[in-house]
Amino acid sequence: MKKRYLIILLVILSILSVFIGVVDLTPTDLFHLTESQSQIIWISRFPRLISIIIAGVSMSICGLIMQQLSRNKFVSPTTAGTMDSARFGILVAMLLFSTASPIQKMLVAFVFALAGTFIFMKILDKVKFKDPIFIPLVGLMFGSVISSITTFFAYKNDLIQNMSSWLQGNFALIIQGSYEMLYISIPLVILAYLYANRFTIAGMGEDFSTNLGMNHKKIVNIGLVIVALMTSVVIITVGMIPFLGLIVPNIVTIYKGDNLKNSLPHTALLGAIFVLACDIIGRTLIFPYEIAIGVTVGVIGSGLFLYLVMRRKVYE
Image 1 (cartoon, rainbow, N blue to C red):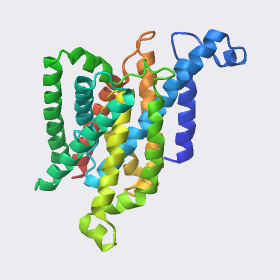
Image 2 (cartoon, helix red, strand yellow; image 1 turned 30 degrees about the vertical axis):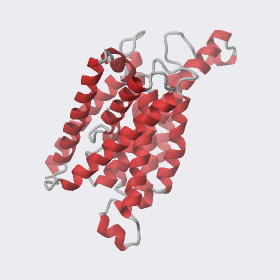
Image 3 (cartoon, rainbow, N blue to C red; image 1 turned 180 degrees about the vertical axis):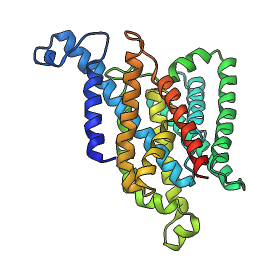
Image 4 (cartoon, rainbow, N blue to C red; image 1 turned 180 degrees about the horizontal axis):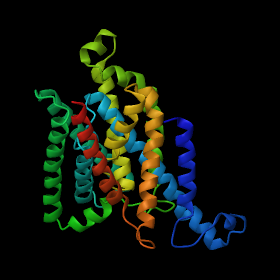
């Protein structure tokens, strides 16, 4: 899995994505664009492409960091309650700050996502049965409890339909002016790369990290803040994209190993490619209609998750 092949594949899929849509556009049209075609490219399709790439990169790196810090390959924002906590935070923002801007809602979601992730990590420390399959099941149960609380309060305040439609992963509504918040993820990705070696050491355990003179808790907290903030930004802008942070890091780790600095660029590229491919499938399968990205990634991701579970059992 060489990086240049991933880059070439990403470029090919990106070009395909720009020219797929209800309004016909061909590469030759680029040389004599009408005003309406120009608006379609710059107001709709190009912002959609950018948001797909950033969301894919962000959620994949979130999963990679969480798996490294928790020392469990089946932990991700989906299986650790991070996404459900962010969703609960968005509901609280809608109830208490009805006129809040997207940035303010994102900050509330960030606080709840961070709190939920910290609680999961504390639960992880208390669990004595450290089987790799058992831990994400605990996370899924924890997330389900938070999701049930969110659904209860949404039902009581007649916000079920609003929450469901708004937070379902969907790039169809992405246009110029509605996706720029995703740019917050770019410096966070750079920060994750700069701290990659420290996250790798932190993943070897507190005793090992302390013996090397590193503040283990500080590095873990930095990693969790990065994860919570990127997850909140993606959920506010695009919606929930399940299993992405679980599948992509596992696939990369099989070929690149557990050194975070080596695997992070490949994880970012493969995450963008995976979301882009799922988006293209969703747009072409029932053309001219489209399937939401949360559905396509969820179906394909759940199948790959089962494969990874079965693959682990075979090696055991």
